[in-house]
Length: 577
Image 1 (cartoon, rainbow, N blue to C red):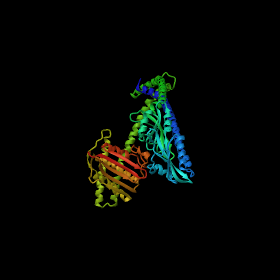
Image 2 (tube, helix red, strand yellow):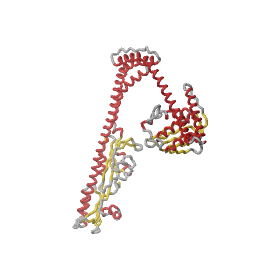
Image 3 (cartoon, rainbow, N blue to C red):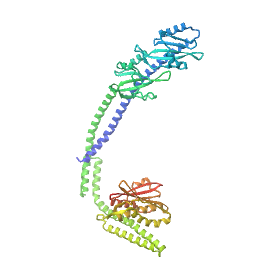
Image 4 (tube, rainbow, N blue to C red):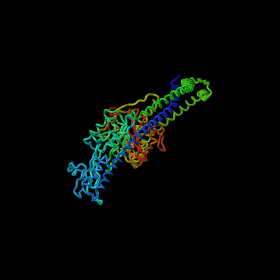
């Protein structure tokens, strides 16, 4: 079977398999995404509930302190009564381990443990902040009994005036028990981190020691987006531990600070169901792919065999055997195609001869168009020189310039005709050293004498080094004249034409730019094709001829144009020739 037949069969297989593959990929992606979001959402819900319970836990602690402060603000209570109330609160409210009341009205300092020295406490923030009318929360610390503790201070108010401070040491064992109670699978645990990144609770028994040490976890990727307020799931791997999925939720303390409750679960367990679903879907899709491959191969072969016969017959006709025919036994469109092929072969002989005749006519037409285009420049130059001579026939300089122009242009015409006579043979070029500045000056002299009087402004910027290139002088002159003529016609006799020479990176360039209307972007791609023009007059051979001539002598031509900003044409030659 020919290679095209195999390609056709592959095309049929691909046409059948791609939709299945795309559908399978989308199904797997969607299923994995849904399953992933379900796992993440479930863990996030647990984290939110835990964060809410901790917030309620801390709020209740503050409310308890406020209620006690309200009770102690009664001016009718003596010191013994206040001390009894404080001790009863410590007994009745299990989370409070120690309470200190500082009453500035009486100068009293009453504590549930009077043997303690609280003088140092009176100089700290836990006393100064509530005296300023605000609630104070200390950092969590571990007591001597290895229990988590936190100091909470509230102001004591009387007639809306701060008269003292109530300071309490709260036991956070309930928070530890809450965190310990959260389990997700076998590897999912909860933990709590303060706004400073300190670990204060962890549900994994293996991490309890980290809590006692007060390890910092703020460097984990999980907490970077959480503290600014944007909670999102994060997958990462701590050093020496398995990769985990972590989600977090904020705990807003009554004083405005924030903690983070995080749920951490190994990705191997969290996404086990996702992996199983992926394997099942991939297996099912693979079965469909195999079945469709077999169906596509068998169906494609029935189509490819007749195509192979058509290809073979086409090859015979291409080799000149116009008697080649095909015979297709099927009763479908391929049989109709075979009949059409046979009818085409019968008429191909007549059409071939007719096409040959038309090609001869088209070839002669292109030669004539090129001949007219290239002879127009020297004839126009001779005509311009004649006009100058008629204006001042007795001026010897004018007569000398006229003679030089006529001789030069007739040499160009003879050179052109000689090369036209050898059209069927290899191109004969004469590569010589050409000084770019002087070469361009001779050409510009002809155009400037004729066009400057019409309001056309010429700007010339030649390189001081007068770079030298190796090229055919006649060919290069034809190319440059074509571009200059296009530039003059583009500005319509009124505008600017700038000619520049230079050297950069071992390249020598000659640049001709005009201030004409420019060339639309959609025309730039085909602007170097034969018979392509943007002017109302002209054959469209100027740029095409220029490029062919420049490439013939080893250079390159580049064009840049912006509508409304003019056109720039650059001739580029290697500096080393």
